[in-house]
Length: 207
Image 1 (cartoon, rainbow, N blue to C red):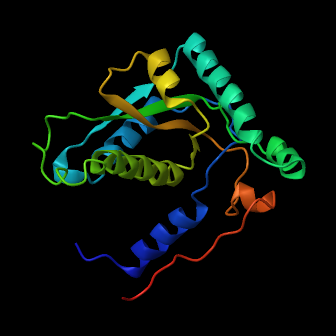
Image 2 (image 1 turned 120 degrees about the horizontal axis):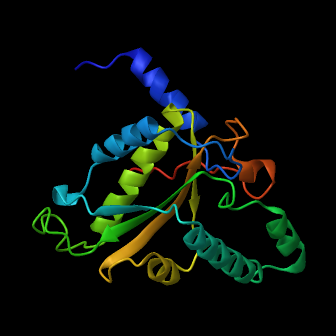
């Protein structure tokens, strides 16, 4: 297939409007859309074709409440590292949409997958986790193409999340995701609007 400028333009738009979403509508995501997003993750690359990502869709209210409590506790700890002025700014940031997002996805990495037969990860076993990250990013772009937002919640105790969700010991939490319709439609990162940090150009050098 020969891709055209129209494909490049469409991809640029998806990349530009892909945001780390924190403000969600509580409207449910249709099952057929979730099915398309699952299929999109199947297209993600992985080391040795290991496909180590394992996804738990968290629907049980009691489990969600435990995840929210986990976030709130860890968020308070995270804010404590800053000086008083920065801590006030940090506290004003909305850093998760856990309460409103209709879909919660916990993405784990299987550290001992049979798939791939070890190809490409003997010297860099962390490639398994990187593979799961590519699957998450593939999902992220596919969600934006469906006019949905995705937020990646990293302010969590990953061991406690795994225990809460009953994940096997050889699964490692790679990302906890919120998915749904964004209430804000913008191409500007939220942290730019809140004067936390602007983008810096990619450091790309010739050696």
